[in-house]
Image (cartoon, rainbow, N blue to C red; front, side, top):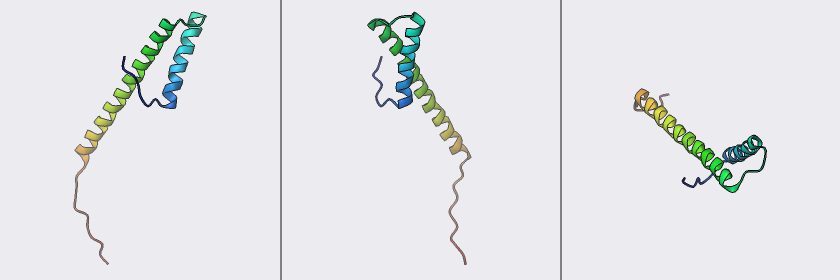
Length: 78
C-alpha cells in the first residue's frame, strides 16, 4: 500500500470513521493488525476515488475540447 500524501479533512474523517465503524462492528477495540487492515482498505477506497475524479476531469476536458471552436476576437468599434 502506498502512502497517501496531502489528505483532505474529509479524507481524514473518512479514515477515522472507518476505524470507528469497524470497532463498533467488532464490539471491542481493534488490534493493531486489524486496525492496519481497516486503514489499508479505506486508503484503497480513497485512492480509487481520486483516480475516478481524475478520469472524470479528463473526460470533461476532452468533451470541452471537442466542442470548443477558436475564433479571432473582434476589435471594438465605435
